[in-house]
Image (cartoon, rainbow, N blue to C red):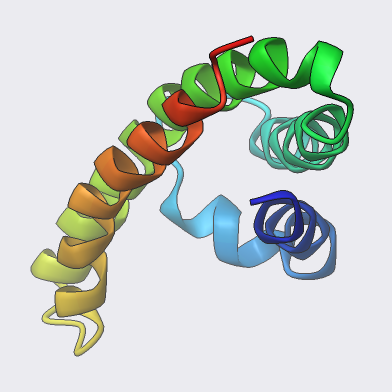
Length: 110
């Protein structure tokens, strides 16, 4: 889980346009939101390592996953409207969020 979120967080800085494209257009400061969410993924992943901070980090990851769900939903809508061949991946990503939340929840126990 640590590796997953560190890699995902770094990807926010390496490919920010990918994330900006899927953000709901009504949200201002897309660049900042992408950077902050990437930094949070990295920071929370690191906090998963020490046992003492693991429950906090897991809850923070759950909240982050809930917060970014609208972007995943927006990506699905965008792909549907543009008949994007990646639509099936966007659709699969929605229930994947639930699985990731469940996985993080396992680490909420002290």
